[in-house]
Length: 359
Ligand SMILES: Cc1ncc(COP(=O)(O)O)c(C=O)c1O
Image (cartoon, rainbow, N blue to C red; front, side):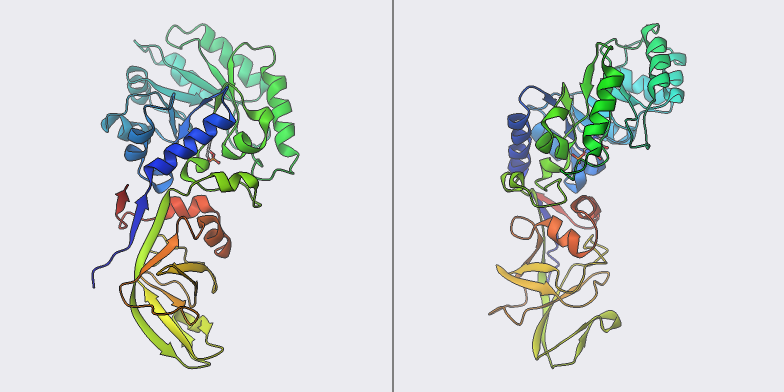
């Protein structure tokens, strides 16, 4: 029986989700965040599909931007973590790659590296997340440096990142927006603060530029179910096949560590996917699955290459039947909750041994 574990990526869904961002925030330029291989969807393919529609892309790392340039992507690419090597700065300036500056060392490196082509720079302000970003003193110093530097483009963007936007009731977002506004008030530069959750849920955060990521892939960015969730189309279907079926008696156990015990005579299907493929190792008994279109539940510990499901409630399941692990019917956020993690973790964790198919 061939192994049919795969991730099927619906590029039209990604485009529709991007268009939703434009509809919700029509007065902003919405950058498509495609770091971490477009959240596991394949950054080159996603960028090719979105390129005619987006003003720019964002990735975390310099290497991720190089992959996109090598794939023929020509729109600007913002590197969210910034650049720390002179050679990388030179490449960035020559290839319309924009860089985030979040500390004074990065700013110094830019002013000390003579560039022939002007570099586009975004400044990140720390508005309370305390992870990356300049404070108000650093901001003044860095702006002074850049104003006097010939090779820094004067179209600098001021940005920040939100710590709690996934919770619509958390006042942290309001506080961060206020701090950002105070810091940027007297500076006549473009601004950017919104990720997906902020773009969808906090109108005050929709500024000149937004940076939606997870919503492009069709997952809700919110902790609690939200009306906007219904408008998003999950873009990845992670699927596998049934490779074995057996009946077990009441009190029989299934899998490593006897992790599941039958409370009645049951039928178990074994499925050709495991944690080495990116199915979460910590998924609990009861995690939902869709087997041949019927709801079933994980029964037993996730192994490296296999999982087991209780299919006692299903009818006519056969070896070779298709299993949706997550996708349009089984939401990846629901699977993530059963594994005490988040949908981002599942999407970016689908491993390289899983082939991506595009439609
Ligand atoms: C600086 C920055 N902006 C935007 C995003 C996109 O966030 P999300 O995927 O929640 O929309 C991220 C993701 O972590 C980020 O680090």
